[in-house]
Image 1 (tube, rainbow, N blue to C red):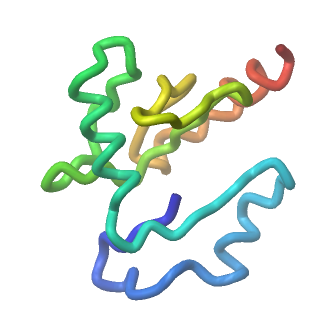
Image 2: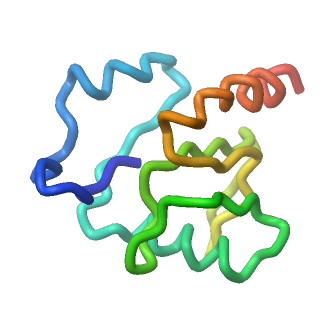
Amino acid sequence: MWEPILPTDYSSPGTAVLARLSDPRVEQYWDKNHLFAEQLGRTIESDAGQPQPKCCSRKGVQWDEVAVYGRDARWNGQLPRAAFLKGPVVHSLDFSKAVSDLLSK
């Protein structure tokens, strides 16, 4: 999920940025109004079983995080629990282990 946070985030990411995640199973979206990020913030606050990142919230909007969900995750009403949720992204590159674990199931 991409969203405008910084002053330079005035439009959705271009092809070169989106190509950083080239796996065909990856889906990327532009969330101009922070709808997903606000829902994620509410889910983190209300579900103690949800991974609790130690950063990356500004005015109730989650940002600069890596969230990984299992293939059976369904977002009906409330977001499901993430298998991995950590930030900032630059310190979350260990998400590949969570992805490998999910793919092996």
